[in-house]
Image 1 (cartoon, rainbow, N blue to C red):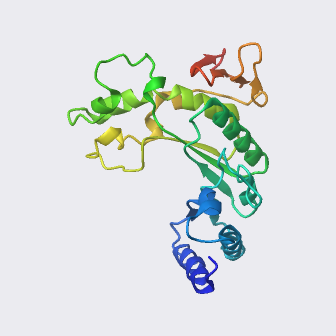
Image 2 (cartoon, rainbow, N blue to C red):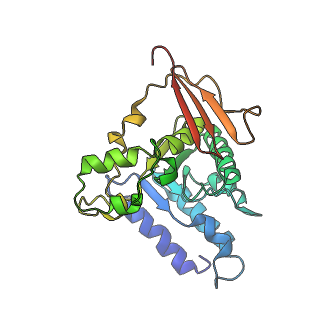
Length: 258
């Protein structure tokens, strides 16, 4: 991005794509890695920010600029804590690989809440995890092996993957506001023949757990100190969400009228 010819090409290529009326915006991947690009030398992150800011300024009205920016472990002078400063030129952020420790999950929740307060888009990517299966996965064969079976129908795949949705869904519901979105899948390959890890299971509209009636949020999430260090809850008009982030226990309690 310090090469001005490259910078001009990068920006113009993005703008050319936006001439297509079916393309709503530009997604910039890898922003969270800009401070640590090996071999790029000092000043790379600042140069990238200058490039991205120029693209922002030249973006056609109504088009979006989204990036893979927010990261719970990031902390550097330009990006700030969690890379939150990158939202100065972005309409929102995609978040991945946020779920490794209870502390990292809580930090991610805080980042998403801050971004949403500023009117930014949040796109949380969650991956099915065998630990979250309801009922508990106690088969001798691993879930990964079962999902790779060519004999499984798509309906069976969706039913199996949905067994693991409650934990990431609860995390999402703790922070959900307008402009917050959840993606729950292994990947983005929609080919039905792609049986590896059930990666063709990507259509969230098919998950019954996502069709619960919420109603209005009655406030932000709160920390339930009496229940444990990593226990949080949030109430909606028709649903109460309770989750122990450390043990991964989830309660989705429907209220009257839900």
